[in-house]
Amino acid sequence: MQSLKITALAAASALALMAGLTPSAQAGGFYLQDLSAKQAGNAYSGAVTAGGADALWWNPAAIAGSTTKDLSFGAAYIAPKGSVDDTGSVIVRPGQAAASVGGNASSKDPIANGVLPNGSFSMPLNDRVAIGVTVTAPYSFETNYETGSWARYEADKTRLTTIDIQPTIAFKVNDWLSLGVGLNAEYTKATLNNALPNLSPLLADGAQTLEGDGWDYGYSVGAQAHHDRITVGLSYKSAIKHELSGDLTVSGLLRPLATSNGTTDGLSATFSTPSQAMLGVTFQATDKLALHAQAISFGWSEFDAITISGSVSQSIPEDYRDTVSLAIGGDYVINPKWTVRAGIQSDPTPTRDGHRDARVPDADRMDYAVGTSYQMTPNFAIDAAFTYVAFDKSTLSTTTAAYAGTAVQTAVVIKGELNDASAMVLAVGGHYTF
Image (cartoon, helix red, strand yellow):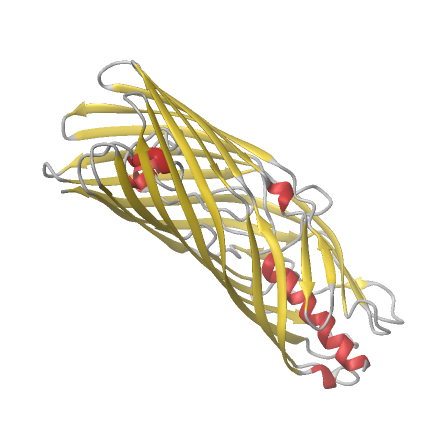
């Protein structure tokens, strides 16, 4: 019975890790905003007021009143850099004094480079109604701490993939108002591996690997209002309650933990990703120059806990805070074929000091973006954007326990820092009208 309890608690811990995965570079918490090369060029400052299929993620009203079919596609290459460094983490095995967790005390670039694809399509049904769909991967990333990292008991190898499919219908109410609504169907798959401590520091670590997936649903609504040279955009994306079902495999544990090796089925973790309320304004200053400002309020406090069910029931607090990102930027039309863009975005982390761990080495950041579009033919244009992301320094500080609630409970006190962190993002894409 003791070994069963140990296994179940290890599984619950692993599911908590899986559900709390954190991304790489481009937005706070575990949201990646690199979903359009065109919108990236002005740091997404004009995304909620933009028209066209590539803006559907931000505002389902973006295609209302369109007169042509619109196909948009692209991908972003994300290259984060930085180190996650130990500043005094310790492990407390049962009956033993606190000792250093050991291992490599500085993990360089643990967040993997990655490619984030996207695609959108829209078509008019008549002069007022249009339908469309956008396919994105807003929570996809991979982390890979080296074997023997100081952070191995919290995070080793992690892979998260999401596919969000948003079918949309939009309606042009009159000459100045457009409305839209979309359904967000989101598939999530995660694989996580992390180390488990044996009871003697002389023994090699064990390991656990968890895989889980599931489909979950939310919605998006939006509006755009146009008056003379001003466009106002307003949209809302609902929180999505996710439930990942998973299987856990434990290996490498030695007596008295050896009976916990094996696979546990039927576990699940329930958690919510945040709502987003977006407000933007575009001012057409001249025939060539458009200026943008946008604010996004993230309901990160909805990610307050992870609820575990299956062999064990447990609620794990996360204590994220709501945040607001702000962006300003502009587009300038050099000639009928060539447009250039630039923008700046501030994006605070939803993680709190005193609750930030090695799985979530997040920090406040600033994004600096430039971009361009070139109209190659009357129907086809290419888009490109480059973003430099500068992270603030942040501290890591948590206390966790392996085999919590058993006689062999092993506490791990994490103390660390995120240092010299930055990211470069290159986005390319195209859009075709017909």
